[in-house]
Length: 126
Image (cartoon, rainbow, N blue to C red; front, side):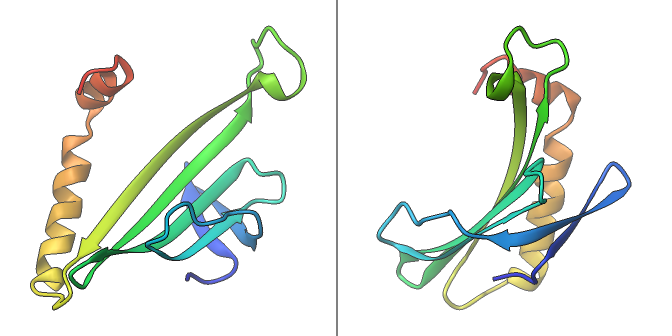
């Protein structure tokens, strides 16, 4: 789906995520899936495309970071915490308006997810 390795920037630092095995489609409508990760698996990206019917294709990308918890009460794997953020592009079969509409929707979502919105999500509000 994407280049291998996938390049992302996190807090001003470039990360290289190589394509790795181990991500299987979960739904019959899935067209393609791919997983990317740093060698230590601190950063992972999951990409997928699915047919939604009527010529609509949904592309999703999720980027996550898993890190050790220095104050964790357990040892080994349970010391890890993770945060994940994803985006979803759903495009109509005619691609009508996508060149203008998709960037505007992306900008609107980024503006929506401010500190207040994030706090409400963490608190479990929907």
